[in-house]
Structures are given as C-alpha cells and as structure tokens.
Length: 201
View (cartoon, rainbow, N blue to C red):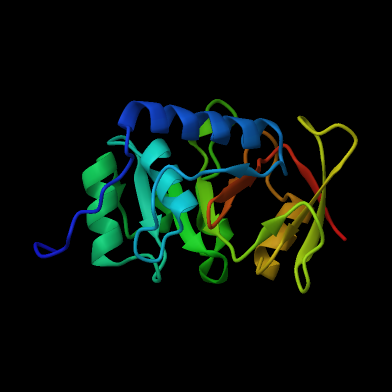
C-alpha cells in the first residue's frame, strides 16, 4: 500500500463536487434520466463517473464495501485518502456497495434502513457496460414509472444480472425500506431509487 500512487481527484474540489452532487440529485429525482459526469479521470478499474460519484458521496461517516474487481490497493488507498471513508469487509455493514454488474453481492444481506430511518439503507453503486435511453443490442430494456417520471421512461442497460432485475421488478422490501440503485458507465450516470416501479421489456 505504501508504494501506491495517489491519483488526482477533482480539479476544483468545491465546484466539481457541487456539480456532481447536482447531477446525482437530478438522476435520483428523475429516475432513468442519464446525466454526464466528467469531473475526474478513471481510477484503476473505476470509470470516471464511478470515481466522481465516490468522491462526492463518501465521507468519514460512511462505510464502503468493494467487490473483488474493485478491491485493489489503488482503489482502496485513493478512495480512503480523498474521501476519508471506511472500508468494510462485511457487506451487511455497508452504507455504499461499489461493484461491477457481474459481481453483485447477495442483496438480501444489505442494509434496508428502517421505517424511522429509511435513509440508512444501502445504496448500490453499480458499474455497467452501457446505458442509453434507446434500445441497445443485447441490453435489457427497463420501463420505469413512479415519482419524478411523467407517464413512463425507458432505460436500456447492458449487463444487469438476473438477481438485480428480480429485485427491481418484485420490490420485496416494504416501503420505505429498500435499496437505491445508481448505475454508472464511462462518464454517464442514472439512478433507480426505491420509489420506482420497474418492468422488463
């Protein structure tokens, strides 16, 4: 770990963090909308969008679980240095889970929050191959409805695992408990919060 090079984070810490936070608020309040995040470069296996999101959401009060592909010395050292977050090996303790779509942890083990504190549920930061509001070859097309969506919105996502699709369509957790999903690829981000009704097309 001592020989790991620290990578630059935001070019302008205050301005860039504010821009990313506004983008994240937008995609959480308007599920399925895709916004751009280009405030950082990639970090090891993390896309620029994933790195920017981590720099904005993580701090010294949060616990982060990294999947095997992202659990590298470079990622761990840089995220700890830039955000002050605590890394945990216990996924059931995590406030945030950071993983590629094919390394999703068992969703039933994640924190769901409580009726009094639903905000204490886990947020999944999932890196996928592609995102689009148009159909992609070989991708899953999701129809989204609910708060923040006039009528319905279509989201095409490559590489979503069946376990996540089942969770999104069945919503097994009693509201307001549940998991919020942030999808990241390249320099793009979208979100599917727990309030969104999802159908697979």
